[in-house]
Length: 344
Length: 132
Image (cartoon, rainbow over all chains, first blue to last red; front, side, top):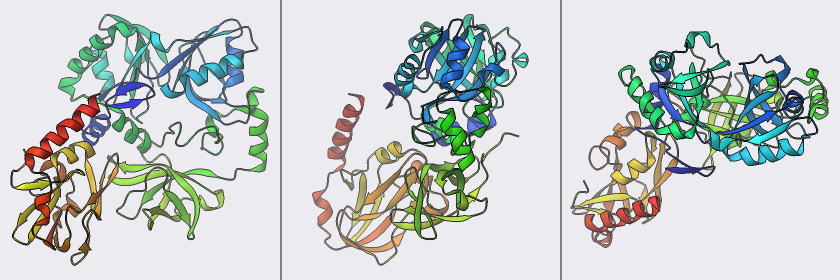
């Protein structure tokens, strides 16, 4: 067990490699109840969400979710999050556990609209069922037609008799679902899902595999690729940054940065050396420190060692050979395209 | 589980002494803590090790750990099989997945380390700290 944002969570159950393999080829079950929830309600709910996040929430239909960033006035990340449109006057934000209180305080402080924000993390448990067989497994426990829930959409329905929000979202690079429900039913649903998935080879997965899976899929992790010093342009998240939607926190700075150009860019690399470039190790270009590894480690499914790092844009081209300083020795690596893994 | 003819360190290495020869590896407890091992870096044959000196690194999926020499001596052999099958460290840490063999500078040095009973008491204490 490790302490993660105040939650005691297993790093692994049967082993990170076997859990990773299960999610890529069959299915895995994650207890992600640590994730925070913040709800925004009222006639000005959309205006508040639009003001504090960088993606365009006005594009959402009811029952649709989007990946977005909670922005500082400098156009950097307070957090990354999923915005779910529950109704025209109600949005459910799913945020990182360790940022939940800071996120909530930031939203409340930025609220000049006819809306009310509420920190509702303690009202939800969340389980993630991920992998090519996730749909078939979850379908055994719910009358809701899962085929009718498109990627990044959600609906409400019963799972093993428990009322849930069922979203087709995830953080693994695989198809899958995240279900939100009353914490009272956590144990019941965990056990029911594990039992339902056993014959399909589903196994419980911990934080370790959650990290290797998201890294292999080239997804950002708060505190690593993104934080209060990085902007969406730098992090390769231009696709969630929409200044055209109208002014939001940091939008002026972001428009300026887009015109002036960024000074560093997030890249993916693969190790050419057998050693592993891990979080925080210096990146060397022409022998000089030019950045740091933000996340690095084995990519179990791809069977190589990979990582992400910030480097100057002029050195960020695909195929560029770089070095990573590993315990004082330079190890060679090559910049490759993100994401490392895309599901077939 | 923990062979009675081995000696153990607080950093979770073991050493088996036969005359002036020592075989060194990491313990079951260490492999369990590391999780899936994916890479091992060992010293060159002929390297002179001091007691407590780093003799190499073991990388698991989640972390990198240094391995410290339980004794002083010269490296006479390294376990070449681990280069292609580092997962052996998870499967048989006290046997097939030994790391290096050394010629001991002082054949009596290892006697000062923990025996199996003392080491098991030591890791039981560790486990208590973990759950506390």
